[in-house]
Every structure is written in C-alpha cells, then in structure tokens.
Image 1 (tube, one colour):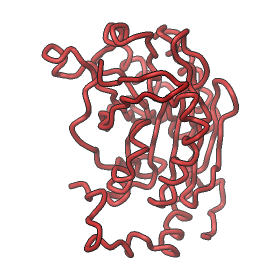
Image 2 (cartoon, helix red, strand yellow; image 1 turned 45 degrees about the vertical axis):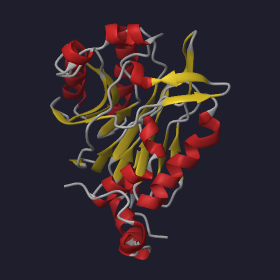
Image 3 (spheres, one colour; image 1 turned 90 degrees about the horizontal axis):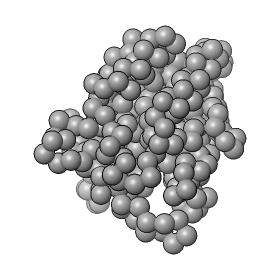
Length: 291
C-alpha cells in the first residue's frame, strides 16, 4: 500500500445524512444545519444525498414539488454556499428541465455549486431505478423522471477532481470506469437505498467501485422513514482507493468527515497500474473515455 500524507495538510470533506420528507422548507433547514456544521469543522466541500430537496409520497406529488434549476430552492442553496464558503454537492435535485412543458417529467439532477454559489456542473441521472424487490416494494422512477442524455467530465474542486453520478448508477461499472479514465479522483454516489438492497449491496458496490477505479468514493445517503410509504437504509460513507471505509455515518441524520489524500491515490495507482494493463483488444473498451 501507499504511504499517506500528514492529515493536517489534506482537504476535508463532509458527508451529510438526512431523512427527507415532502416538506421542502424543513428539509432545507435540516440540510443547512449540517452544511453549517461542516463549515465550522473546516470542510471545503459538503455532500448531500439524492432527494435532499424532498421525498414525495407518489409521482404526482413529486412533479408538483419539483422546480427548475433557476428556482427558489437552488438560490437558497447558492446563498448557503456563499455564506459558509464551501462547495456543495447537491446529490439529486428534482429538476424541471427545459423540456418540462413538452414531457411533464423531470430529471434527477446532481448539482455542484462552488463556494461563490455558482453552478459549476450538472449531471442528470442516466440509469433510472425501475425495479421490483421482494420485501422492499416496487419502484418505477421513469413514471416521473427522464433519463439524462450524457455523462459529465470530472470537475476540479478543492478536494480533487469529482465525477458525478447518482445512486442506481453505482450498479454500472462502465460509468465509473469512464469517469476514472477521464481523470476523476473522487466518485460520488448520493443515494436513497432501500431497506432490502441496502444491507445486501450498498457497501459491497461502493467498495468495488473504489477498488476497480482506484478513486475515493463518497456516498451521502438518505436514512430512516420519510413517510408511510418509504424508508431508506442510510450508512453514508467514504471509501478510499484501496477499498477501505475511512468514514461512516452512525444511525440517523448527521455527518461524517474524511480527508482526501491525492498523493496516496497517485502512489497506489503507480504501485498497482491496472489501467495500463487493460486489454480492450480482448473485451472492448468498457467505459469509453469521455471527450
């Protein structure tokens, strides 16, 4: 294994865990408290989970509560970023896109704000969660949501180059490989995992994505019961490029902190140069590099 740098020199990130409800203003209040705490503790970037804005009871309520990127809620988060002086990963905003009038559907949009409150990147979830898991209840995200058309190039932040994804995307390693080959050092999977798939797959998938891409993986998660129809697994975490869980939230809303050591990441990639050993001549270029 590589040797870590002195921790005092490393950027600190905060991973926030919340229990969103259909009450958007209460959700904002909860998230804002965690972001302010992250700033007080010295974090340069705070990660919020998928559906940080709200979790509705049904598709009709989801559409009713959704907003465009230029709406009131995103402006409140922009002001929060400016107030706290840190970057925000807003892990899954229910976005009314430019095609809202035609489709009457939204996008599950991962928004990255810088410390001045400006939108520096948006990624619209490309893999929609249409599944039926026994004991967890059916989910058909496509009832209200359109799949995003493309991946986004990794974005330089004070913590490193971040590749944006959302929840169910973690089941598709082609996406993470494409982001890593495009220069990502940190992969983000803001999520709202269920109570059956969570214990079985959550940590395993996150650690696998970290190991195969040699990236940090940051996964902010929803937790607890949102309303009578839905609950989430929680267990927000940060995984290092070796596959070690280096930070983990306890039960219930709160946050955990982790240092991002890019020197450790680069040493690990030099010691175990898997991307140099790939054989696309045998199995194709899984995860095509992004242009």
